[in-house]
Structures are given as structure tokens and as C-alpha cells.
Image (cartoon, rainbow over all chains, first blue to last red; front, side):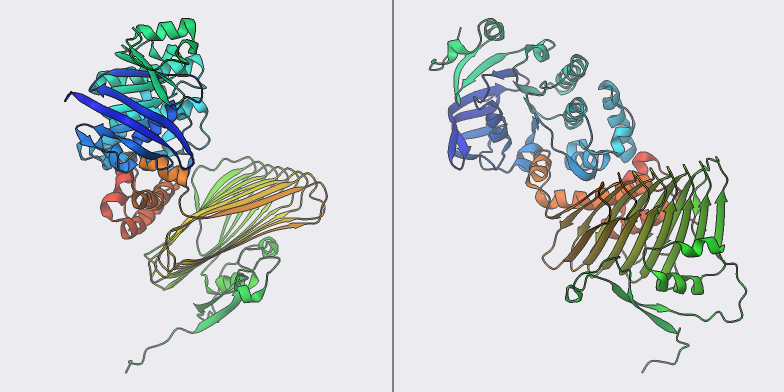
Length: 254
Length: 360
């Protein structure tokens, strides 16, 4: 199908000495919201990082196509500029780099987002207001000394600033209290409204999905996609857990 | 053949900027020798600081203190009255002494810019922070590529005084800077942030000394910088836990980003200890940007080269954010324009609407 934004086909990948993903195939259409669920250690985060191009993982077979181009061998920075965004489960601290310098630099890398410094400041200010962030955060070092919730807000701020075509949210909801979760959910909703971007949400927590209209749900167990279905599959997992999929061979659950 | 000119007399300051405890001489990390102009002031009448300031240990040592005193015009003495919260920063001249009385607050700014007419510039700043005083010292070295700058700072802190120092060494042909802070009173605190950039053939020689004399003192020294080209940097950082400083804690940490194989980077962290119930820590990381950081930045669209350039830009951005006056911002901006180019350098100023009006 030509309208697929992301097409992962027969993907096998892992670290140097350990295969993690086995024959994974998954497609996400433009503007769609997909959810990836599975027990701990299933390989969900690995899939997110492999799609993003993390060199810690090696692709041994299969392909990743994004926006009509094969990006399997592209570096992460090229994939990012092409429109893929990975929100980290544990955002990395970057001492010595004020958040402003960082945000400005990554924005200026994208020709479609270039703007004057003052417009940029206004834009960041608007987004910060949306995310209930204080005004002093811009001059602080990137992710250094921020709480877990603040770090996730900074991830959302980048999501709203960069407006990627596809956002992979790797357990963005983990470790958040109710208020922070609400703010992050608002951020995701705002992203969908602002640019109709596609989402691949990796999560254990269905609360983050409450504001989203989910198109497809995927279940991963031991590095394999074992089930795929509509949004109602999430309720099924909520009620019965992942055991039902432990021995599944894949296919549509409905 | 060169035409005859009136040459300025010169003086060699031998082996200055030394730490309290030295290492093997063959490592060439103990000191620096500098050639400086030495104008005679015979017959001049000038104002000197009160003798109280003579006893303050300054980072670059007594030879540099004597030389700066001999070259400065009138010394500048500023007293901040007890309990006064001085908003207006004190702008240091070549020889400045500041007395911050009990419970007072003050900010002292030292700025060396590229407008100096002499190839050598210098600043000597001595500060006395009395009981419960709050002192901020902001140092900016943003001189030209062909200049050498000497900066020697000495601070004493009495009981409960808090001293915060931020240093931005943004490039000169030679920057030699020494800072000594004596926490003489109990519960005094010293926090230092030092950011530096060395490129091309630049030479950086930094000496930080903290004498922890009072009980329950705290000192925290954070140095970080970027070195590129054939830059040579030596950092000496000493935390001296003197007898009687029980309950005190001192920590020192340096992060250096080395971008070129031709860089010479020397770091000499030293903890001296003559007391039982104290804690002293030091550490250093030297190398390229960490793989985790590189990957995070790559995931947001930056190549490794762009990520490294971000660290240099960030250094100037931070200096601009921290600069307290339009004149200092203008000096930092001028230096940033030389290193980063006009477009990038002006970006932050525009975004934050910082006032950088040119000085007359």
C-alpha cells in the first residue's frame, strides 16, 4: 500500500551477541495511531530504537521504509530529519548545553521550521504554556537536574516543536504522576491536532491512550509480533493480560 | 630592518599560578611563565587598597599581585554596607578590592574584552565576605586572538558567607587565571563554575585553590570546557582541608571535550587533608561527547560534528545568559561572532532580547 508512512518488513535485529527482534512486520499509515503492547522484555523499546536507527542494534535482515524511502541503512540523524521522532523512556542528560541552544539548533536544522529567533522564542513559550512549564527552564542544561516528569515534558516540547511525521513514544507515561500524565497526554493530543502526525505508542498504561483514537494495536512477545487488532484489543489485554498471547503465532486477534 | 621604536620594558613572571602542592616538574603542569609589559610609575601618586587586602591569597600568586599593583592606575575600593543588598553590579577595574560587610549581598563583574589597546591585559580582584555575606563573582575573558590576559582573584569568606563564582574563558591567545578562596568561618560555602574554550594555538592556564579552614564548610568546583585545534590547557584544582575544618566537604569535577588529536590537555586535581572528619572528592572525564549524548542528539537530527559544534555554541549561549550588563554581553557577543559567525552568535541575543548596546 502506497499510503503507508512506515513499513517494517521481516525485520530481524539485535545486539552483537543477542538476537532480539524476529521477523517483525508492521505498517503505520500517515496520521494513524498505533499502540505496541507486550510484557516486559518483549523487545518493544528495541523496535522503537531500531526504527530510529540506534547503532547499538544491528539489523540482520528485513527492511524499514519510511515515507516511501528505504531508510534501513540511514543514520539516526537522517531519519530524524526525514520525520521520525523517538521519545525516550529515560531522556538523556546533556550537561553543558542549555535547553535553548539545543532546541534552537535542532529546529534550525529543518528548513521547514526555520524562523527568526524572536518567533522561535514565542513559539517555544506557547508550547511551554501548553505543557505547564515554567519560563526559566530554557536557560537550564538539557535534562540536567529536571525531575522525571519535567524530562518527559521536555520530550513533548520537542515533539510539538519539531512536528515529525511519525512519533514513537517509548513508555512516555512511565514514572509519571497523575498530573504529569495529564499534561503529557495533552501534549500528544496537541501534536495530533497540530500536524496530524502518526503515532506508535509503546506503553503498559492505557490511561495515556484515553485522549487518543487508536487505529491499530500490536502485541509483541519475545521479539515477535504475535497479535494485531483494533483498539478494542487494548481492553482485552487490560482484562486478561498477555498470557493469552504467549504461545500465539501471530495474526489478527479479532 | 625594523625601524627604531620606543619599546615597552618587559618583565618575566617566572613560574606563577602555582598550586599549593606541586607535582613532578617534568610534567610541566605546575606553573606558567609569562612575559608582561612593565611600565615604570616612578613619581606617580596613586590610591592603594587598605592594607587589610594585602593578606588575601590570590590565585596567581604574590608575583602577579605585585606586578598588577605596579601597573594599575588607582585601585578601586568598594564597600557594601552591612545588610545592604546591592543590585547594581560592581565592575572590577585592573586592581579592585571589595568589602562585603555582614549580611550584605553583592555581584562583582570582571570582564576582559577585545577592545584593549595593549596586547596584555590583567585584573586583580580581592574580596572580603564578612559573616553571612552573599557574593557573586562573574568573570568573562573575551579578548582577541592575539592578546594575553592575566586574572588573579582572592576571596575570604567568614562564618556563613556564601560565595559563587562563574568563569567564562572564551578565548585569548593566552589566558592565565588563578582564583583562591579561603573559607575561614564555619558554615561558609563556595561554588565555582568554570567554562572554557580553547582553539587554534591558544593557551589556557587555570589555577583554582580552596582553603577550607572553618568547620562544616562546603565547596563545589565544576570545570568544563571544549578544546580544539592545537589548544593547550592546564587546570590545577586544589581543595585544602586545613586542620580545624571538621565536618567540611569539598568536591571538584572537570569535564573536558577534546575535539582534536593535537590538543594538549593537562588536569591536576589535588585534595590536601589535615583533618579527620572531612570529605574530599575529585574526578575528571576527558574525551569526546558521550555515546548516549551523541545518540540522543542524533535522534533529534544532529550529526556528530553538529553535536560537537552545539557544545561550543552552548558555551557562548550560557555566557550570554549569565552576563549581567549590556557591556559584558557586547564583549561576549563580539567574541562569539569571531568564533561562531555573526548569524549564530546573534541568535540568542535576538531570541532573549538581550541588551547589547555598544559601549562608547
